[in-house]
Image (cartoon, rainbow, N blue to C red; front, side, top):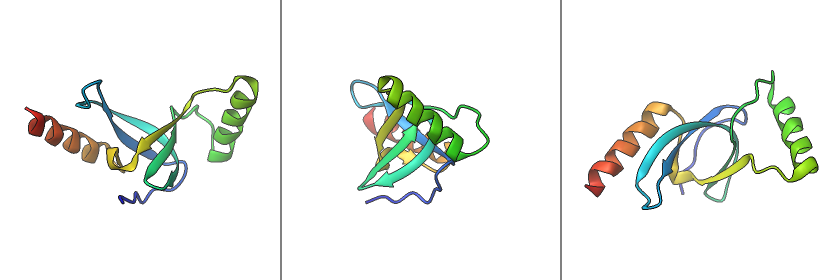
Length: 97
């Protein structure tokens, strides 16, 4: 199982796939946790000074309307740097051609 060495609050880079499971984009998300091979991330940081403020925001959003701003990705599709994610996406596209 792939283990990312990120701390909550850092940026995690995910390779997003299209409907045919071909890499379509690389996007940065706010890393929250990794559990049993999955990465839990926030859709985007909201400009707060620290992780506690970000989490408070998401808790309020959840209470008010069950927000879908948290995402879960397979860890195999996530990387610590944008460069790693882009290289992995390019490699997978080449393998699918």
